[in-house]
Length: 158
Ligand code: SME
Image (tube, rainbow, N blue to C red; front, side, top):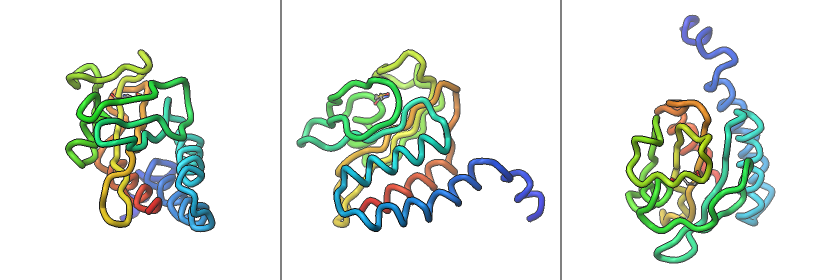
């Protein structure tokens, strides 16, 4: 147990554990989804200093459209089933991609991106309304722990 705590000291588990209640209280006071998404990606991006952190919202049955984000310019529209975002939406599950060059059809909004995670965002009825897309300039940045924490965080948007 002590060893476990030592390993995580100052690590991402501590950061997520601190962030989760902060995000919960920030979104609790605001009913507007765009405003909630804007603060969620700002808080995540500030805490972890990733390359790009943001949301793509479901525009219609076939397309995602860029939502609130932090980081450099990004593509505005992604077709269902295209890239990591469109595939996570279609398959209705979180995708952890350790090396974007090995993901067929990856959409390179930025050549600097090396790894990414995409987490579907659901409404209270379970329908996917958006995806959270996070990109890193380092390979293999994200793992199962990120998936678990980020799934808990996007559940707060319901
Ligand atoms: N990497 C994404 C595209 C969006 S940008 O990286 C911000 C994808 O392949 O779905």
